[in-house]
View (cartoon, rainbow, N blue to C red):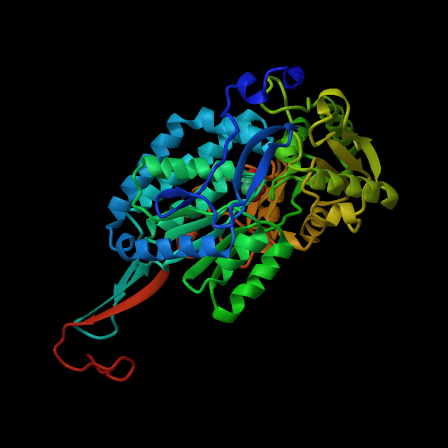
Length: 514
Ligand code: UN1
């Protein structure tokens, strides 16, 4: 990571935006917060590098954004869905044109390597096009009536203003998943982006602005969870909240939404498992485990943070994984040949360090990594070595709790049944995977893993946008985003009965029709 030590300002060395003050996007205008205060956003690979300052907003700003979204809803909901789709296609084209530029800014703001931030933008593009296509579908149901000369159907209605609280690990993909689905259904949007990655959502708003989305349909308010997130959740004009983040925060949001029965979609923690069977291709499993555990520096809800390996291939797997993990090159994600970027913050590094100590104290064997990287070019960032614990027990805290960093835990097992039982033996249920060449193992695990996502011969990460995304147990609250399931979050059913018989017909009573 020599280039980060350049004497030029980092944004000049890497052709990035010069730091400046960014504003909220409310009612189609870029406006300052009424607080007059801003907060700083810095590069997690180099804290000397200021990405920009962002509005430290409050409840008044949220209220202005929600009012704008509420006003815009009156017209947007009546705009034919295929016309709404035109805006989404346009945004998709703009994002495609600017993909590399946007991804570079995202790597600077969030840390993951450029290939991955390009993938993140691609997910947003994919969702824009998928949901634009929905503009000509948004399928409802038609079904026969039990009575003659009567027509029955169920149609989807928008809800109104949709509030979104989005995470920093997929800073444009997840805002894209949520907002594209909400918009195509006819809702309007207010987003509070994570304070580590507000620029990514500002760039999405810039794309909507360029696509000439009507004023007030898409709004962004930056600031803290307490000052912006809470008023958004509590605002009675906001009809649905979609949140991606930790299970603890999700629980609080759930409680806050309950008194008003506000619709709520939650996407929370994970402790995902890769199961490796004796008959697996071990090299392929090691490839998958490396990518699943250390992609995004382990900061994915879907990260492969548990590796349950059958004893016949256990030692080979552990040795190969540790050897490969040691070779991963850690650094600034815009430098060529870097495999893994920093963690998002000092706080996240502290969490990783805490769990490395917990794992060691619990008696698991550290076979790779275990240290924060602080010297030389690492001094200004939040770096940690890729870390592998082996010989862990399923009940250990490192096998149970979400770490959200570059740490994975290998647990030996004797059979498929034991692997499945260990795999399911956590409070989360997002993603799971099996490496096997035996179709019976694959289908048994597919049936018995109680997770929202399941993979065969692939790691636990890498979901595609046209399938439902989400998890069971403490990962979610029964909803899914992405795919057609995303439409369900942002629409409500209206069942419609049209009686053209000209006489009173009583359902369930006038049954003698033949
Ligand atoms: C997340 O970690 O919050 O399946 C989302 C994946 C990505 C999305 C991850 N497509 O890993």
